[in-house]
Length: 90
Image (tube, rainbow, N blue to C red):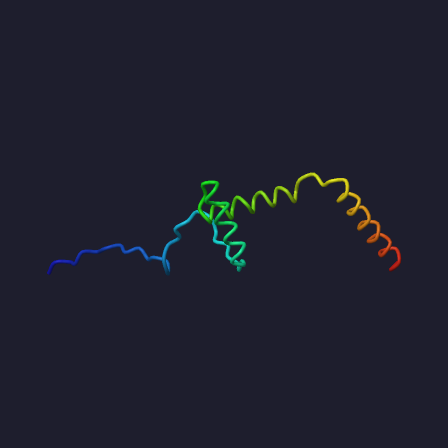
């Protein structure tokens, strides 16, 4: 009797494989904002997804940029009020 052919079958993971390189981020956005993002992305040669990523990155860079004098004063006053609150608890 001839032996049957042995085939090494690899087990596959469940579901469809990932298609993108980056994780998916989802959220609810008003229609007006989506329209603005679409308009900006089209005008600058991006897809909606690329446009959202670029705008988010720019927004985060703006937040982490050097604070202005007005915001430095506000930060200082917040820090002072927090320190006073801590001293009051002690």
